[in-house]
Amino acid sequence: MSNAAMPALIPAPDLERRDSLGRLISLTWKGECNCANTGGERWLVAVDGSACSSRAVAVGAHLVAMGQGSMLDLVNVQPWLSKEAAETELGRYGWAVTAMARRALAESATLITWRLHVVMGDDAIAIVGLAETLGCFGICIGSHGLTAAEAVLLGSVTCKVLRLAQMPVLIVR
Image (cartoon, rainbow, N blue to C red; front, side, top):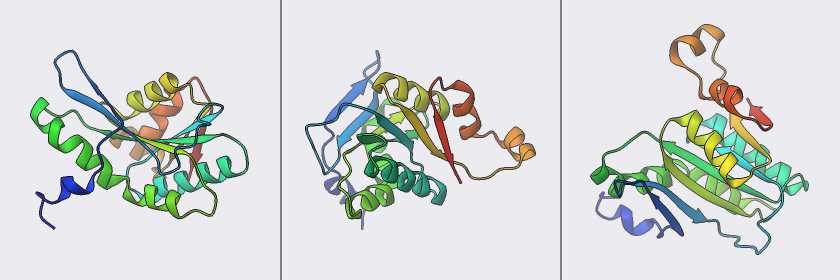
């Protein structure tokens, strides 16, 4: 499939935000189950396309299915892009990276209300900031299982989220 055909597969976002320079910094899509009840406890689930983020989505969906929340907010954070690149790449990258998570929610036995947020910025800061803005009950995030030394050398988004968040953080391995 050519890159020219790819944008046709991505639906138009329901909401977009721009910074003071007019650069696209955030896109939001409503999930397939656009239920009226989007209030109540929401879980923010960080999705980066990895196996551990897929497990975090499954755990978040299970919590909602058990009545431990009313919906999931999926978030994918992309690094800072130029104004021109953000227009074409932010949505395309975020949509592609979250494909497995969206498919898993669509195929689940229980209808789970969800929204997808693709934002630009520093991973941990953007995740915690979005959770606070949305009034989420907690953050569900996968852990790659780095050793302490690897986390110090490479950095760990999960550790940074844990330090920054003022709400419960569920770490899924």
